[in-house]
Amino acid sequence: MSPVVEVTGVTKAFTVARRRGRLRRRFEQVVAVDDVSFTLAEGEMVGYIGPNGAGKSTTIKMLTGILVPSAGRVRVAGLDPSRQRVEVARRIGVVFGQRTQLWWDLPLRDSFELLRHFYRVPAPRHAANLDTFSQLLDMGPFLDTPVRQLSLGQRMRGEITAALLHDPAIVYLDEPTIGLDVVSKSQVREFLASMNRQRGTTVLLTTHDLADIERLCRRVMIIDRGRVIHDGPLADIVARYGQQRTLVVDLAEPRPPLEVEGATTVAVDGPRQWLAFDGSAVSASALVAAVAAAAPLVDLSIEEPGIEDVVRRIYTEHP
Amino acid sequence: MGDTMAVYGRLLAARIRGQWQYRTSFFVYLAAQFTITLLDFLVLLVIFTHVPRFAGWSLWEVALLYGLAGVSFRLADLVVSQVEYLPRHLLAGSFDRMLVRPLGALVQLSAEEFELRRVGTLAEALLVLGLAIAHVPVHWTWARVAVLVSSALSGAVIFACIWILGAAFTFLVVDGREFINAFTYGGNFLSQYPLQIYGTALRIILGIVVPIGFAAFFPVLYILGKPDPVTGVAVIRFLSPAVAAAMALLTRAAWRGAIRHHRSTGS
Image (cartoon, rainbow over all chains, first blue to last red; front, side):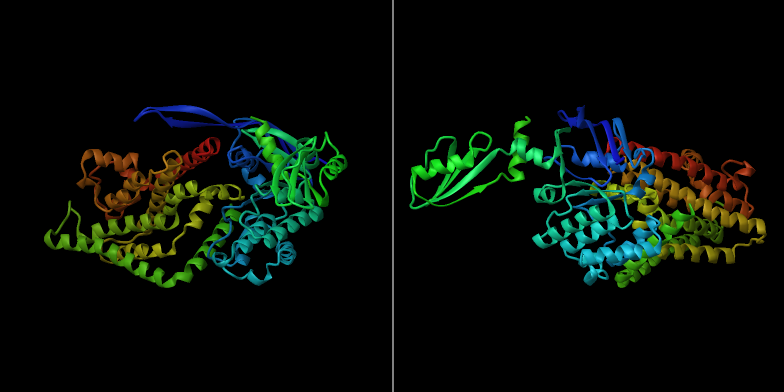
């Protein structure tokens, strides 16, 4: 597998003017991306996550050629986006979740037809792609509706189609499921998964919805304050940071918070109690036995840490 | 290049189709613009009811200048002036979308903001130019026709360049639009009258710094067979295409530089 994207020691610094008093301004360097390196292999689906302002968008802007790095080297499909912007643009697809790239007053179908000419896609190929996409995303009923009349979910399906119709080698998706309902979300995810599986499209996905990551990405990169602080399989992250499990017990009758060794009772609601414990130090079965010895048990369950908790812990542990 | 023009044509067609959904507003605007610009010309008529000649020029001679400058300016207005909306796209982030598509940003910007309704003012300029051609006592040789047509096109290029230079400037100063309008609309206004009515400083600016004299005035001197009251250099009457070409090259370099600056500063 040859890498589709190679990022080597890339830094992006901006000069910003800060007001100091009425007239004086001081110029400061702000490093948005700080010595970042990674590669994306063909057919990989990678989650790129981090808090707002961490440098995600700046990275993607450098990969698409919108911004030129201050230092370091970027290659996309073997090309340098800062020098070969138009050539790179032919090989990539981009979805900026919050901004449309469709023509507001035109039917969806006409937007796609215009994009076909931008990317010089042969008519038969375009027709076949559009057919497949509109089935997978269920777009048939609104292909001829002007974009301004579409619902958010319909429009987003249109945006994603627009980014993928020219068979790009790699797509950058910035918040592709933002504001969507549960059904549209899962439709979008299934579509991306099948594009990746069937066409080997490489995907770099930026999102705040960690369910997107759980469903789609085996590899996750976490960026914070311009630096990549973690790059690895999703499972590793959960294993490393997600040791905190929770035992939920339903007792025969309400009781004061239980005191069991190796666990902390974090919540009580009538006969139900939540006990947090470190999975690497205490086994669940030992804990259950200890609880059963302390009070009669009716039912129990164990909550695994969600990736959201995991990411929150990662951010707080890297001050 | 051919590819670019083909996509540009399709973008324009799509834009017009989209706007056609609001045709009432289209026709109202068209008629209003035609009428308002025609009032400009009526002012000229009124002036000439009081004076027989204006700086040695008759009514239809001035009308020829007015019409030719108007055609140039409004062609540029129709095709290019919308680049002045660049700051809006920079602030909204929609300029990024243009940069991730495989086409020049300038072509996308001018196609996306294209307003067909601006043909109303172009029609007025063509009407005045037509009337002037019919009335001026000129023997229309091929050479005069060639100078007339090349002057209209060169003038359009010169005005277009001023707009694009202005847009390039707004990469640096986002709210510089008013400043730019002083050169575009202001330049158009000044170019409609014989250059000798202005003071020396303004003549130099219009002749050389912002070469609006080449948009209509110098070629019209040739067409009307008038002496040059400003420079006295005969060849200057034929230089409009060369001036336009030079400005186009300068503008191209400035636009590219501005895009490069934008991509390295991100603002």
